Amino acid sequence: NAGVTQTPKFQVLKTGQSMTLQCAQDMNHEYMSWYRQDPGMGLRLIHYSVGAGITDQGEVPNGYNVSRSTTEDFPLRLLSAAPSQTSVYFCASRHDRGVSGANVLTFGAGSRLTVL
Amino acid sequence: GQQVMQIPQYQHVQEGEDFTTYCNSSTTLSNIQWYKQRPGGHPVFLIQLVKSGEVKKQKRLTFQFGEAKKNSSLHITATQTTDVGTYFCAGYYGNNRLAFGKGNQVVVIP
Image 1 (cartoon, rainbow over the protein chains, first blue to last red):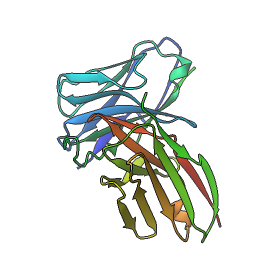
Image 2 (cartoon, rainbow over the protein chains, first blue to last red):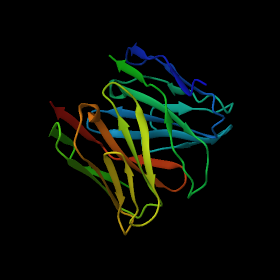
Image 3 (cartoon, one colour):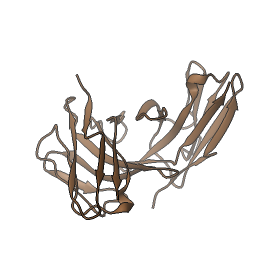
Image 4 (cartoon, rainbow over the protein chains, first blue to last red):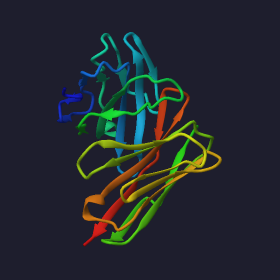
């Protein structure tokens, strides 16, 4: 049981390049999400998905695309990287327990992205 | 938009002393969660509080949820070097958006 797996762990891009951060979970979680973490800013929600074929925007979605073709995978795409996207990205997943349930996130180890 | 605010943002704590970190929401929360992130690591779930006025303890950690369900606190007694890290509170706005505070980065002085 690997939990939430993110690849790559580190990546350096040039401005304008595109790339995909991969996220996979083996816990059969319905809900998956992407956060970015910047110094002094906490964790900010980029996009999330409540199931295969369903995605929605979070707090800071601009510059990022997502798709959810399977329950297990939730890739995050940067179509044209900008220096402002330099950050640590975390994928997180959980079961959907409803509004009053224990909707606890399990995080991956993170992907550190630098855009030059 | 909905916000979760944490104070203080940074704390230096002498080993053996107690400290408290606070979390406030601009709106009423259905529940509040606390996570801990060790330096270089990822956030790990600590606890969830659901009921108004709820108090939960985990060894030296005491978590409280305010009566109005808009604030929470984490109190750690007899701080140890293993307590170093950043503590985040987070609240759900709707069923699907978990908003995190900016965190309280704790440095333990031996």
